[in-house]
Image (cartoon, rainbow, N blue to C red; front, side, top):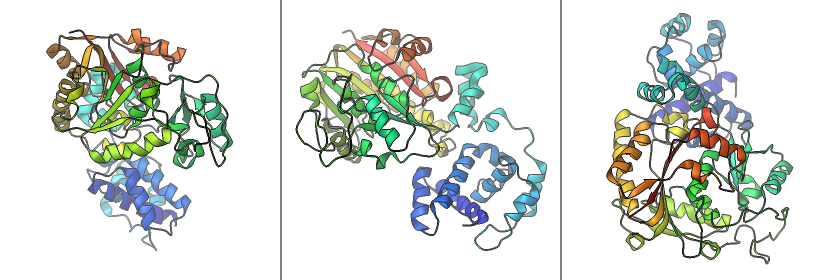
Length: 470
């Protein structure tokens, strides 16, 4: 493909993203599958242009006079992100071959006029209501936080310590040509750079269940959830909103020891099994109940639960998967019996905008109010499961106050039978590093913790921890 044809393709992909709700990654892959003539370099160039535009969409829309179509955004990106001259942009819009048609008079005028003075929220690439929320939380640092949300994210992995050690996994990934580094906060995490984008799912280590993709922030909130708890085969742990199952797998690891020594695994026909024998790595299974808990993973969609099954099998752990109704029905047998209830609540996902920048401009203020009400309802439902002395952990992947502190405030006011558990009392978890203990102690406020790309170099997360007293 010519450079001009790549621009036309990027504009088409951007229009497809705008017309639906599918993630940009899915739309880009579909475009590649439908256009086999595009080589790997072409696909990468188109994807890079698409994500470049998505991260700066608000700024580009303003610069192009309010136009939101893919062509206008691509033209704007050439002028205001790549800083190409009008002549250079016109050369890429000659209309020849598969390239875009020549610039219109209006487009030329927009390029010539420049960006001008943009509102702070627009310059930051965020909806105004989100920018205002960040200002209230972070004060003068809000632009730094906005920049972090719009930046590129690394690929974080969690090492399955029932199968290998962190250093053995790191050596295996290095041998595969990657450049893994230890995560600073999670003691069982590895981090891969975003460029070049690693194909983790093609790795032996991934398919054999030795590593799992999980952002370090997601790991941290899970380790805090289980910190200090004693796990026995009678321990009941409920992952109330299991979703894709990433935290379900991490919760399963809470009951298993963090290995100090494990064999360095090399590819072979049969792999090491944590229970011995010659089972394959993909099918070897550790019964979590036998190792120290009864894990129940719940969701309102059967499809999500079905998607967790192969992940559990790959990791070598087991969980009781439960389909629950919209009003929480389906797990009443555990009312007042759960030692730990973990709520990874449905939310805006704003904490992960650096991974899905297309969601930034899809989010509307009224959706936050709907989510706030849903989160409160889910918290009230799940609280019934917690036994006296048991723990309730509320988590979102959001940076918005209405989904975080406002929900925690409302829950605390309505549930005096739950006391806050200070984050600082949970920092002895062996899966946290000393750096994490120091950093989290500073970041926490009583029983609440905020993580963000700018502050902790993780996705944005919020956690609030409670213990039932009555």
